[in-house]
Image 1 (tube, one colour):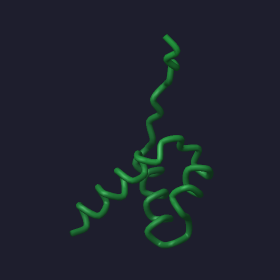
Image 2 (image 1 turned 90 degrees about the vertical axis):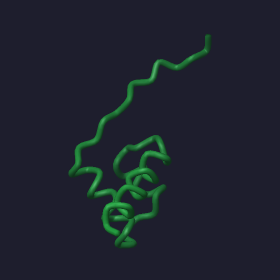
Image 3 (image 1 turned 180 degrees about the horizontal axis):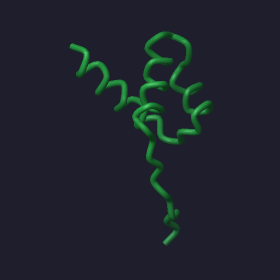
Image 4 (image 1 turned 45 degrees about the vertical axis):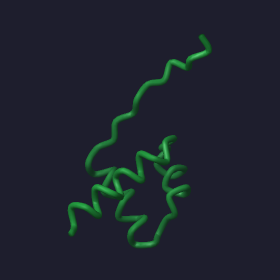
Length: 57
C-alpha cells in the first residue's frame, strides 16, 4: 500500500554521454544535469560517471 507506480526511464547512450561529458568538463553539476535532462535519480548519474571512470582507466 502506498507504493507509487513508477515507470523506469531508459536513456540512450547519446544522452548518457552528453550528461557525463557535461559533468566531467565542468559545464554542469549533477543537480543541474538532473534538471536539464529530466533525470529524477541522482544515483543513476553517479553510476554513469563510475562506469565512465572505470572504462577510461
